[in-house]
Amino acid sequence: MKRVANIVSLAVILACAGTLMWLFRAPSAVARNSAFRVNTTRTVHFGSPPEDTPDTDVNDQFRDWLLYAVLEESGLDSEALRNALYDVPAVRAGFTLPAGAFEFGVTRFRILGSGGTIVALLPKDGGNRKDQLAQIADAAFTNLGKPPSVVQVFEYSLDPVELTANVTRLPDISGSTLFTRDYGFTSKEINSADDLKAFLDATDDVSAVQL
Image (tube, rainbow, N blue to C red; front, side):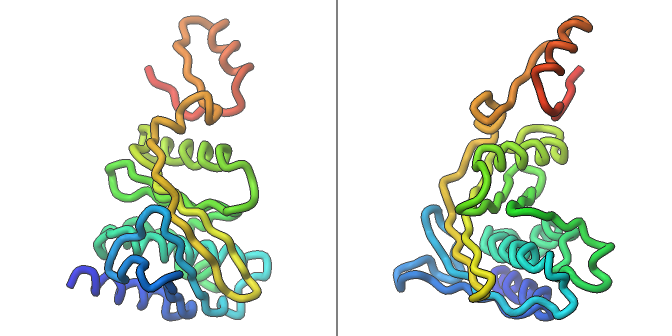
């Protein structure tokens, strides 16, 4: 019953925006009531965005809907799903524009509960993957006050002409992996003004300070 409630809840949210439907690549793919498994690819079909959606926001609208779809498959119950998406209205149009915390650009992410699990939606082609993950990790650190425990990575390719997207779940990444030099992260104990100056000169952004 809980799973049915999730599906109905999501359908109600998206009813005004159009239809969204999962199609599996093969009959042996994951059942509809199962989680989105690693190395599984699915095709998402969109409805048309609302007529008053700005042209510059159309692809961003599709990415928002992809985030909705991926989160609905994450196994969250209805309350947790609402909490994860409370500030992301289903449409980028009309009265929702000043009310939502909309993301722009090719990536999307959400924090699932207080456990530190992150869902990250990244483009298959476009941009530096490590940079994109590092930026998401920084933003999650700011919100959580600690590094995320794990990042569930979903890779997508968007076809706005055909109103479709393919989404593949990639292997999870440990949150601690993203806070290493390999992802452009460094930390240092500061004991003097010279230490602080040297650190700031060698870095682009400061994510956190611990006393």
